[in-house]
Image (tube, rainbow, N blue to C red; front, side):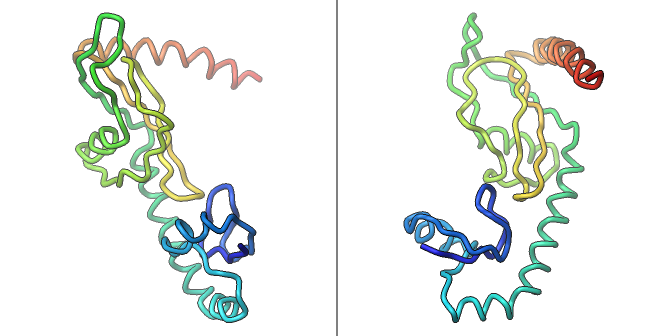
Length: 172
């Protein structure tokens, strides 16, 4: 099915692009979410008429996402969980837990912005990507530990691990 994108969709195209997608993807996601229109003559004319308004709305969303990204720069959340001696959690840490921790810190964030491939099931420090806008993303650190003392030790160990890698990357 050929559609016209009303906003930037990651891995698909930018606003105004005519793209070919599977009909199920268009019917079940893009069209109901108002991210696209079917590519008909009437919809092309409608898009051209509404283009300035859509660009202004996209610019406002982009600016809001950029502001939120700046607020979250260097953010680190500590989640205290029970775990076995091997480090495996009794349960898991999900998108909901991460979004709740960010909201409790004072930054308003919806769950849909947290990009986590699979739930976290072990103790440790994990970088988690936040997709705030198709063109704006931010990475935050989530530290999962049994206690606050253990969290401090893990964070120190993580920063010691990543510091040599960062220096090496800067040298190249």
